[in-house]
Length: 228
Image (cartoon, rainbow, N blue to C red; front, side, top):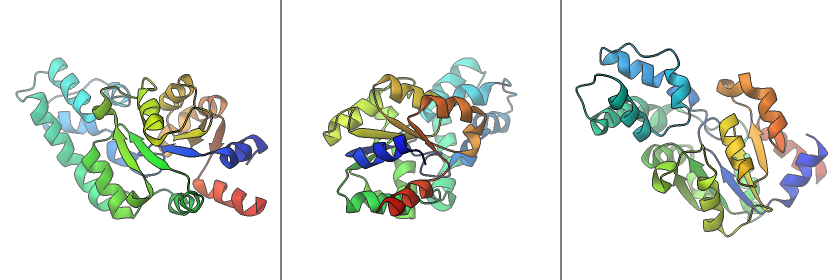
């Protein structure tokens, strides 16, 4: 890990974590989700549907599909179908990514406030964090649906920062996706990007944009041990 990233972590006073692909290995749940649901309803989706869904919440995805496809159900009914398709994954399967729990424990021992800022549904987020034992480490969970903005804007990070009492100089955002890193950077935040299989195609662009790039949280733990 380079010196710039070490200094950033050492100076960090507040931390904002994305959920999917950053601290929770849940992206496999979402791959082809929209396509799978549409096909189950007898609809052949566009080839780029999954790409468009990456920046949407489940509710936004439901509204989009009911506007653009001949479905005989409402957006709210489609939302419930989405929820059923992903709920089991969050409640029973998706694990924390390597080194996450140990890193959260390390930050807690240093009295660094932490929160989760996610595009995922609150009930799914809390179910996964509770199952994995990570929920108690966070002061709160904030979702895009609750603030009415997707991660195409930095609003969710700004709101989370204000709730914790930090500022853009001492609050570090942890994200995995390029568009999320870009949004957080546009809000003035230092960003540590985290490798995920689903975003590896953008790895070069992400690493150039972020203030630091890690393959896993174990790298940060190892750095802390080596510098102590």
